[in-house]
Length: 545
Image 1 (spheres, rainbow, N blue to C red):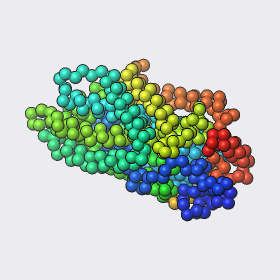
Image 2: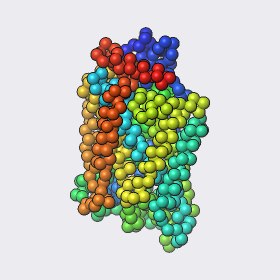
Image 3: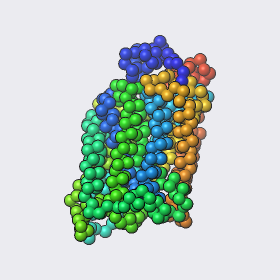
Image 4: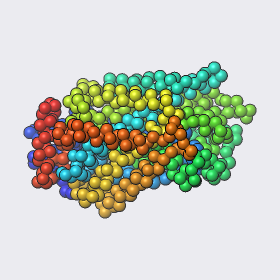
């Protein structure tokens, strides 16, 4: 990576005591994104760790998305698939940690792709990456709120198993309540968000320990070692050959720990982002895997009847496992224990939805600041009294409301929501990784965390793994398949690229100057940067920044 450059006499790195200051323009302190701070830097390392662990929500995500991979080899597929996901997400996490330590901005991969692409390709690559990343996180928010809604309904069912008749719209009503209550909290109680995420970390860490102990000790009988570790073939009900089925089931593991860029979008709300972001990414992936791995093993030994777990992708089979784990010797369900375990997951998931809403709103806000979205001047506005980009947050909520209706008409909707989140977000990681390697890793100043000579192989391996698994995640979930049960992730990916490409032609070619990071991190003497920076300043002045 290149040496730090200077802008108006201020060193990008090491020239100011405050690491959040990278330049001073006309007496105005500029942060890494090229703007003055508009959000309060209210998150210390502990608060950031709270968001990291809560948004990752790893063991809860694994249990709640178990319907995605339970047919791909049963418990062995889930456990070993998680290990494979950890392996390739480690390369992704290392690359993102290096970027965030070098250029900590709310734009995250959007800004990093811009910088990595250089003066010739950066504007286009950043634009595409930013939009893909935003769409990916929107699918994640929809999947998480769907999980919270399913849990809400099943908590009611625990005490009304004989009278309740399931209807998909029941879940959607719960979905809307969880979503919009969370949005209201994000907008009107932004100062309380760090505390909600610390509370979420409590439910995930302490609640995870309690849950693992309960499901490990309460069952009157446990599954055999053969069932947990060696029953892959007999529980491969997808129609695919074993190797393909296993790799397709890695999606569950990826959804479990696949949020490494979430906290990078909080960079402009941290007093020490260059040092704290890499630490939080490592904590998120490492601690998330540890809890999810232990939970997966305990959960697998608690299963005594696989048949009730294979009723459909949009269902919530975890409640059936909890009922099996807490039942007495006669098979009677312990309603209190089941409800209590579900309540732990419900609290963790609702708090996770709040953190994810914050992440999504910051992504869209970062795009709007650079005139990359329709009505950008409005969506770029921040209510500084609330310390919240209110229009961007409301837009996120409206889009999530629409996505939540998809499961009303598709029996595999949750698979498409989870799969699209992983495919779109990892594609948005692969673009800056690949561009950084192809440009000789010369545009980024060295941050406190730097990969050095290992940077190129780490980035290359991350890109290769992303390509491999994203292709696999577009395969039909099971064969033979039908129009109704088809995996539409490939269609969604193509649609996102098509919409982004259309918006580039209609709007961006003439009106999108690229983000200010182009002028800060790509040397001014390189052809094209002065012009891009001039347009950025003109747009910013017009929008009142």
